[in-house]
Length: 204
Image (cartoon, rainbow, N blue to C red; front, side, top):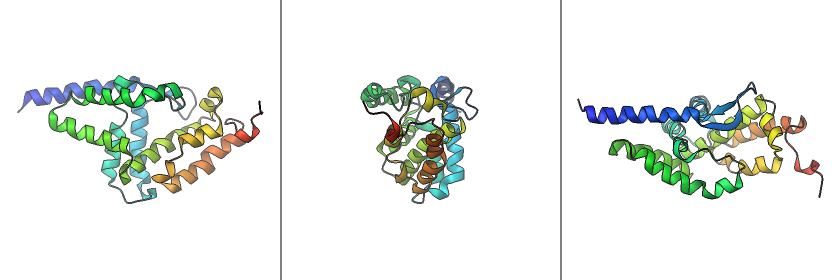
């Protein structure tokens, strides 16, 4: 048995436990606390198993699940960049690239390459699997926003235009999921006053 290799992998497994401490800005369905990155990844991985039939193109479901489980690991070092943090987004790519180099280098070379390729595939947004993964990455928070009665949107004073911009490419992976989200998650929160419709925002 190659104990050195095994020890290196186990050390990495302990390291990625830190993903559980990275707080996101979306409330859990009961609206009582914010979810963390690991919960987000777990939730989407299961959703990929359940919703893959709604992908625009046929996908390798195991690859989609793998991409979803890996794509936020770099936030262990880079931190979570809030979707509506315009200043943070300016340095996000640079921070996450550096974090990917640092994080995956802790694995044996073959596994480091495998994990990095999955992360890069998500970032490149080109394969059917990465597009569907992005659709789920957008769909899941919208679902929780609606389940938690738009609490995070209310607290942040979010506008419809911001949410639509955030989701501008969602349909590339699944047009059906995007339409469902618009009708069942976004519109009800507009109607309830939890998401500001820009048309109703007073003009300066």
